[in-house]
Length: 244
Image (cartoon, rainbow, N blue to C red; front, side):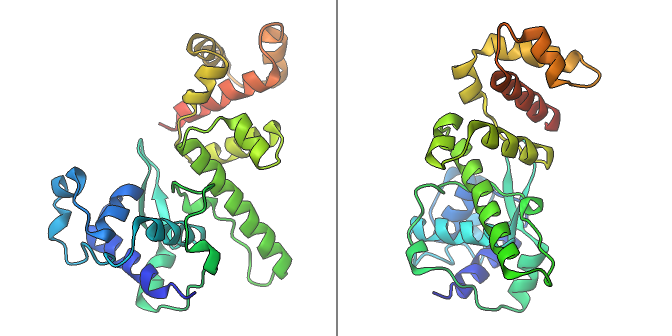
């Protein structure tokens, strides 16, 4: 189906809001749903407030996810990641084109329930590349979105890896890449469960004390207590702390 008009509404809403907002606030705003945050921000007086009140939350969840996947909205990295219109989205609002989504995507994908976006995480493929490269890039981007959503829902990372038929190493490698590109998340719900808060902090303190982190050196130092995956998890927590 062509969701062009719905995407236009999202972009117009974000532009009138004039500041990055959370996914939930954007969804409530589009539906004209009252909330403390919307009232405190004075958004309920905006012309576009309730512009999408003919659709339910699941519908807007799907359209927002697809808008992110297409690069029309982006994340503004901060302590609480928030959404705003991207340059591509602003161009779309001025000169709309068809925005097609599959019929079976009109309902929210259970594996993609939260939206945390980084425009730079969208894999940019030159227009002269073969179609199969574009398909691979799209699949890669979708996998990144799923990982972000899994963390947002506090799903155990090993369970996520199993559900996606990925190795735990692959998940950690992808997560590390995203963190280095600016993703702001919190995985302590998982690391504290797997390692314990004190052990995580011990490893993070060790990593912070090193001029340059070396996994080989860390394994020599702590290999009798922690395995490589646990040290990698602590290293990712360290990287996250450095982005704040």
